Length: 212
Image (cartoon, rainbow, N blue to C red; front, side, top):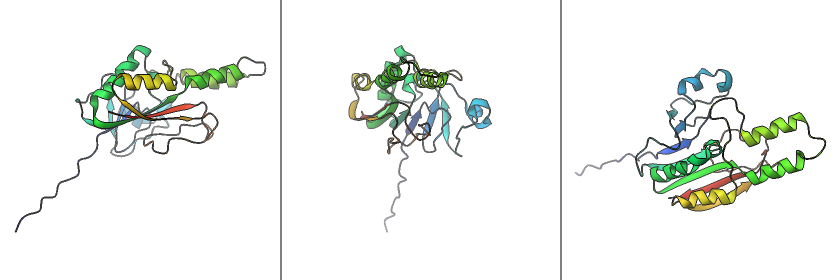
Protein backbone atom coordinates (compact mmCIF):
# COMPACT_ATOMS: atom_id res chain seq x y z
CA UNK A 1 0.00 0.00 0.00
CA UNK A 2 1.42 3.35 -1.04
CA UNK A 3 2.26 5.79 1.73
CA UNK A 4 0.78 9.24 1.33
CA UNK A 5 3.30 12.03 1.93
CA UNK A 6 1.91 15.07 3.69
CA UNK A 7 3.82 18.22 2.86
CA UNK A 8 3.72 21.06 5.34
CA UNK A 9 2.63 24.31 3.77
CA UNK A 10 5.60 26.65 3.58
CA UNK A 11 5.16 29.73 5.75
CA UNK A 12 5.17 33.05 3.91
CA UNK A 13 8.09 35.38 4.63
CA UNK A 14 6.51 38.71 5.54
CA UNK A 15 8.36 41.85 6.65
CA UNK A 16 6.97 44.62 8.87
CA UNK A 17 9.48 47.21 7.71
CA UNK A 18 10.01 50.09 10.12
CA UNK A 19 7.85 48.48 12.77
CA UNK A 20 8.58 50.98 15.54
CA UNK A 21 6.98 49.88 18.82
CA UNK A 22 4.27 47.83 17.08
CA UNK A 23 5.42 44.24 16.58
CA UNK A 24 3.06 41.92 14.71
CA UNK A 25 3.03 38.15 14.99
CA UNK A 26 3.47 36.33 11.68
CA UNK A 27 5.87 39.01 10.42
CA UNK A 28 9.59 39.58 10.75
CA UNK A 29 9.47 43.00 12.42
CA UNK A 30 12.36 45.27 11.44
CA UNK A 31 13.56 48.58 12.86
CA UNK A 32 16.98 50.21 12.89
CA UNK A 33 16.63 52.33 16.01
CA UNK A 34 15.12 49.91 18.52
CA UNK A 35 16.12 46.70 20.25
CA UNK A 36 13.83 43.93 21.44
CA UNK A 37 15.06 44.54 24.98
CA UNK A 38 13.98 48.19 24.83
CA UNK A 39 10.55 47.25 23.53
CA UNK A 40 10.03 44.64 26.22
CA UNK A 41 11.16 47.08 28.93
CA UNK A 42 8.03 49.23 28.43
CA UNK A 43 10.02 52.18 29.78
CA UNK A 44 9.78 55.84 28.71
CA UNK A 45 9.11 56.09 24.95
CA UNK A 46 8.53 52.32 24.83
CA UNK A 47 5.65 52.41 27.32
CA UNK A 48 3.10 51.66 24.58
CA UNK A 49 5.16 48.96 22.87
CA UNK A 50 3.20 45.95 21.61
CA UNK A 51 5.26 42.74 21.73
CA UNK A 52 3.10 39.64 21.13
CA UNK A 53 4.50 36.36 22.41
CA UNK A 54 6.54 34.72 19.67
CA UNK A 55 6.77 37.84 17.49
CA UNK A 56 10.03 37.96 15.53
CA UNK A 57 12.22 41.07 15.55
CA UNK A 58 15.43 42.02 13.73
CA UNK A 59 17.33 45.26 14.23
CA UNK A 60 18.35 46.28 10.71
CA UNK A 61 18.57 49.19 8.28
CA UNK A 62 15.79 49.29 5.67
CA UNK A 63 18.43 50.32 3.12
CA UNK A 64 20.52 47.19 3.84
CA UNK A 65 18.20 44.30 4.55
CA UNK A 66 19.69 41.01 5.84
CA UNK A 67 17.76 38.81 3.40
CA UNK A 68 18.77 36.96 0.26
CA UNK A 69 17.62 37.98 -3.22
CA UNK A 70 14.10 36.81 -4.07
CA UNK A 71 13.43 35.46 -0.57
CA UNK A 72 10.51 37.54 0.73
CA UNK A 73 6.82 37.14 -0.13
CA UNK A 74 5.39 40.36 1.29
CA UNK A 75 6.60 43.71 2.63
CA UNK A 76 4.38 46.10 4.54
CA UNK A 77 5.70 49.47 5.66
CA UNK A 78 3.54 51.92 7.60
CA UNK A 79 4.82 55.45 8.28
CA UNK A 80 8.48 54.53 7.76
CA UNK A 81 9.74 55.82 4.41
CA UNK A 82 9.37 59.50 5.41
CA UNK A 83 11.92 58.83 8.20
CA UNK A 84 14.65 57.85 5.73
CA UNK A 85 17.36 60.35 4.76
CA UNK A 86 16.47 61.68 1.32
CA UNK A 87 19.39 60.10 -0.53
CA UNK A 88 18.69 56.69 1.06
CA UNK A 89 15.06 56.54 -0.10
CA UNK A 90 15.95 55.01 -3.46
CA UNK A 91 18.16 52.44 -1.67
CA UNK A 92 15.18 51.34 0.42
CA UNK A 93 13.05 50.78 -2.67
CA UNK A 94 15.94 48.95 -4.36
CA UNK A 95 16.31 46.69 -1.32
CA UNK A 96 12.59 45.94 -1.25
CA UNK A 97 12.75 45.02 -4.94
CA UNK A 98 15.86 42.87 -4.38
CA UNK A 99 14.47 40.78 -1.53
CA UNK A 100 10.95 40.30 -2.95
CA UNK A 101 10.24 37.10 -4.82
CA UNK A 102 8.83 37.45 -8.34
CA UNK A 103 5.16 38.20 -7.72
CA UNK A 104 5.92 39.36 -4.16
CA UNK A 105 3.93 42.32 -2.91
CA UNK A 106 4.71 45.69 -1.30
CA UNK A 107 2.19 47.78 0.61
CA UNK A 108 3.36 51.14 1.93
CA UNK A 109 1.80 54.14 3.69
CA UNK A 110 3.17 57.63 4.25
CA UNK A 111 2.10 61.26 4.71
CA UNK A 112 1.03 63.23 1.64
CA UNK A 113 3.18 66.37 1.65
CA UNK A 114 0.71 68.14 -0.65
CA UNK A 115 -1.86 67.86 2.13
CA UNK A 116 0.57 69.17 4.76
CA UNK A 117 1.42 72.19 2.62
CA UNK A 118 -2.29 72.99 2.34
CA UNK A 119 -2.76 72.64 6.11
CA UNK A 120 0.11 75.07 6.73
CA UNK A 121 -1.30 77.65 4.32
CA UNK A 122 -4.82 77.30 5.70
CA UNK A 123 -4.10 77.44 9.42
CA UNK A 124 -0.60 78.78 10.01
CA UNK A 125 -0.53 81.89 7.80
CA UNK A 126 -3.56 83.62 9.29
CA UNK A 127 -4.33 85.24 12.66
CA UNK A 128 -5.85 82.94 15.25
CA UNK A 129 -3.52 79.96 15.21
CA UNK A 130 -2.32 78.73 18.60
CA UNK A 131 0.81 77.09 19.94
CA UNK A 132 -1.13 73.83 20.10
CA UNK A 133 -1.83 74.10 16.37
CA UNK A 134 1.85 74.76 15.75
CA UNK A 135 3.10 71.83 17.83
CA UNK A 136 0.60 69.38 16.38
CA UNK A 137 1.36 70.40 12.80
CA UNK A 138 5.11 70.30 13.44
CA UNK A 139 4.80 66.72 14.69
CA UNK A 140 2.91 65.71 11.55
CA UNK A 141 5.50 67.40 9.34
CA UNK A 142 8.75 66.63 11.19
CA UNK A 143 7.94 63.63 13.40
CA UNK A 144 7.61 63.38 17.18
CA UNK A 145 11.39 63.81 17.61
CA UNK A 146 11.53 61.80 20.85
CA UNK A 147 14.66 59.95 19.77
CA UNK A 148 16.83 58.76 16.86
CA UNK A 149 14.76 57.71 13.87
CA UNK A 150 11.74 59.73 15.03
CA UNK A 151 12.32 62.59 12.60
CA UNK A 152 10.64 62.99 9.22
CA UNK A 153 13.24 63.80 6.59
CA UNK A 154 11.77 62.96 3.17
CA UNK A 155 8.54 64.32 1.61
CA UNK A 156 6.20 62.34 -0.65
CA UNK A 157 3.15 62.96 -2.75
CA UNK A 158 1.43 60.46 -5.10
CA UNK A 159 3.64 61.40 -8.06
CA UNK A 160 6.87 61.03 -6.08
CA UNK A 161 5.75 57.73 -4.56
CA UNK A 162 4.86 56.33 -7.98
CA UNK A 163 8.21 57.47 -9.39
CA UNK A 164 10.25 55.59 -6.76
CA UNK A 165 8.13 52.45 -7.10
CA UNK A 166 8.42 52.13 -10.86
CA UNK A 167 12.05 53.33 -11.08
CA UNK A 168 13.30 50.22 -9.25
CA UNK A 169 11.26 47.84 -11.39
CA UNK A 170 8.16 47.34 -9.25
CA UNK A 171 4.69 47.56 -10.80
CA UNK A 172 2.19 49.87 -9.12
CA UNK A 173 -1.13 48.08 -8.62
CA UNK A 174 -3.10 50.64 -6.65
CA UNK A 175 -2.74 54.01 -4.97
CA UNK A 176 -5.31 55.38 -2.55
CA UNK A 177 -5.44 58.68 -0.67
CA UNK A 178 -7.02 58.56 2.79
CA UNK A 179 -8.12 62.09 3.52
CA UNK A 180 -7.60 64.48 6.42
CA UNK A 181 -10.38 64.32 8.99
CA UNK A 182 -11.78 60.97 7.89
CA UNK A 183 -11.80 57.77 9.92
CA UNK A 184 -11.18 55.64 6.83
CA UNK A 185 -7.98 53.58 6.57
CA UNK A 186 -6.59 50.67 4.52
CA UNK A 187 -8.71 47.66 5.45
CA UNK A 188 -6.11 45.23 4.05
CA UNK A 189 -3.24 46.62 6.16
CA UNK A 190 -1.92 43.88 8.45
CA UNK A 191 0.62 45.77 10.59
CA UNK A 192 -1.08 49.09 11.23
CA UNK A 193 -1.27 50.26 14.83
CA UNK A 194 -3.36 53.27 15.91
CA UNK A 195 -2.69 55.59 12.91
CA UNK A 196 -5.09 58.36 13.81
CA UNK A 197 -5.62 60.92 16.54
CA UNK A 198 -9.14 60.89 18.01
CA UNK A 199 -10.07 58.33 15.35
CA UNK A 200 -9.36 60.63 12.41
CA UNK A 201 -6.50 61.19 9.98
CA UNK A 202 -4.43 64.30 10.78
CA UNK A 203 -3.42 64.78 7.15
CA UNK A 204 -3.94 63.00 3.84
CA UNK A 205 -2.14 59.65 3.73
CA UNK A 206 -0.83 57.81 0.67
CA UNK A 207 -1.43 54.05 0.51
CA UNK A 208 0.44 52.32 -2.32
CA UNK A 209 0.28 48.68 -3.41
CA UNK A 210 2.83 47.23 -5.83
CA UNK A 211 4.34 43.91 -6.89
CA UNK A 212 7.59 42.58 -8.37
